[in-house]
Length: 268
Image (tube, rainbow, N blue to C red; front, side, top):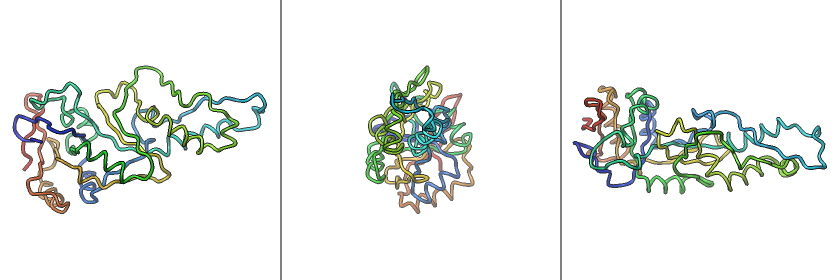
């Protein structure tokens, strides 16, 4: 991958992860990436409680169970147990012949929102190697893929008509695990269309741990610093890169804006 000069041909599939300067230091020091709680996402479809539709059999007294408790238990089992890490992709129509706003590292709003207002960085990962890292290092199934953006009401088909009798008999976690196995690729990969400019790709797993982590640095291909990344941090960054075992010529660029157009220049 060529990161310097006026050309960035993108000769291999990559994923981009925006982060702040402090989090960048933590990632390099620990050589880890974290999958954080799904419930901490910014989209209300993800951070607000899910209330599935319940179906009551003919022989069950509606007063014999607590519907609110079932909703809370199902939400905890499906939404609150999910952990994820998010990336952005190049826009599908992007032109490899020049560096432009279609590139995953060149998103002004994402620099503002996710990388401390251009003071952070973008980590560039080899897509194929990161896929392998996630699936081999995480216990349990890993759901992965691009996010789909919806304009309108979220139908949540997997959560419609859940039988109360089955929930009471088998328990919410057992039913939830079955729902996740069958519909996880839908449940965790749909966001409101308002987020569509992010072209997100994510990895999701479900566990009872507070978070999951993977050793992802072997998949790291480059780092792009924001235009306002502190100059006095350069020496510390080089030291951290060396401690990670990365070569002296490991690609580190800075994203500059020239007449409103993002370009990459050498960072050091």
